Image (cartoon, rainbow, N blue to C red; front, side, top):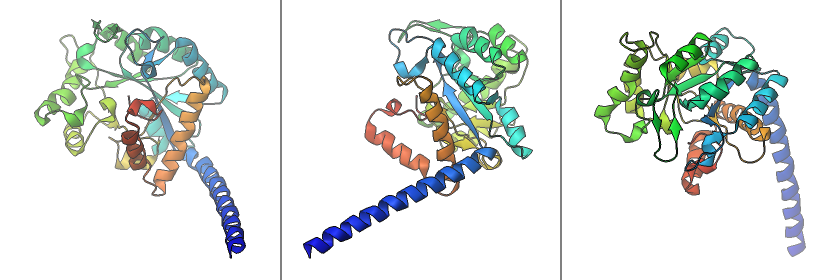
Length: 306
């Protein structure tokens, strides 16, 4: 009997392994098809060495950032604005070579370092700035210096997309509801008002820390100038994403985990895989949220948290 059970266990193990291999192959094939109509978005913060007092995951060195952009260029990718990605998806185009590069917080090095590198490779970026910090510098929690309005204006005129990262960067799902109008609406005034404004309308918002809920979504939808928002959900963006959940666009953080450009490549692949699995009903983001809570250190995993 014991010998029979051992043989049965061995057979079952072989069957399980074969099934796993089969489904892995099937998923890879389906992901390869899925990527023709899905655009991933990468999230960056500071393009710099790690300053004293800063968490290391917030920074990608200029050298590594340029290596990553070169890899994208050499592998046929075209970095576009959110508006361009949406237009291509709506037109039913093959978007397998498109990618969105997003930058949160509005650090000055996004202008002095990232912007020239993007132009060098013919890329466009999407920059989400904290309204109250434009043009300011702070020494709390390490030195922080932010882009000013002339810098943002130059980038906008060069084809970069500028958007809101709210006024204060507080996680929107955790603040008192009566503060939401200021956090969400006031950035529209920062860019459009004639008295010291930048005289153009922004169309996008990136929720700080990926934090949002139904109340946040309802508040954003009150203002027609907002056309999309980046959530804290991993995956890629399809025509259906823009049509059905435009304020819950997917993206993934790029962090320096010591593997060079491979960390970015892995993040891109994870976008496509997570997006495909979500499209067939797998609760990818629910699983990831559970893993984040169990880890006790959300920024440790290279997904979407800051």
